Amino acid sequence: MSRDIRVSDDPAAEVAERLTEAAIAGGDVVLTGGSTPKRAYELAAERDADWSPAHVWFTDERCVEPTHPDANFAMADRALLSQLSAAPTVHRMEAELGPDAGAGSYEAEIRGRMAAEPRWNLLLLGMGPDGHVASLFPGKPELEERSRLVVGVPLAGMEPQVPRITLTMPAICSAREAILLITGENKAATVARVFGADPDRSLPAARVELRYGTLTVLLDQAAASQL
Ligand code: 6PG
Image (tube, rainbow, N blue to C red):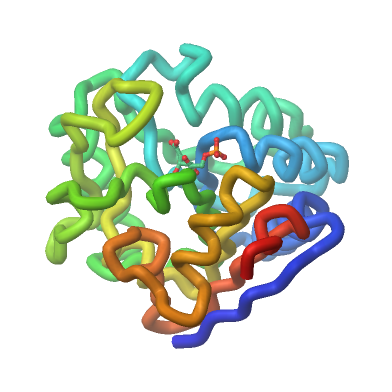
């Protein structure tokens, strides 16, 4: 529906606040991986709010054991989930089953709770330097998936080069609210390609358009420096 691009002095603090509010309200909150959101998760953990009404989901996962250092779950669990006195219901992607079985099982879990159009209350995304979001990489067939909510990704587009499980673009774009958090100078050129005057639609980040809500693109000064 709409998109709001904002530069913030402290994007991690803003994300921590939005996550906390959504969790307290009992929302279906979708966490993401990579290194960027870690600070936001730590700040949310420091608030130690009552997350017990919330359901926590994930945008994507690497096909490793959940405790592996590369697992998105492991990072979110260490930084946030395991730190909370009142924990949410956590819906982890079982990536250790492999990309196809893991994706099938997560799709069933989502449809069981949220039907075919999951209206996530708050979905968090990061963006890779190649413009990927979740594990939807430029030029890969998974980016074109229209009917499934979750797919396996046999060939990742970048490190770590392990298969992935990812929400599809339709599953991402049915969120009520989403935040695309991008920080750092190394993302600035891609930010300009995605959000500048002539958006490059081949980049997955340029295709995130929510059907029912607002996408907030939250940048720090460095990431916004070429806009
Ligand atoms: C993943 C993520 C991915 C991430 C971007 C940005 O599993 O890798 O979910 O989409 O958000 O790659 O990662 P960084 O924050 O590490 O740059």
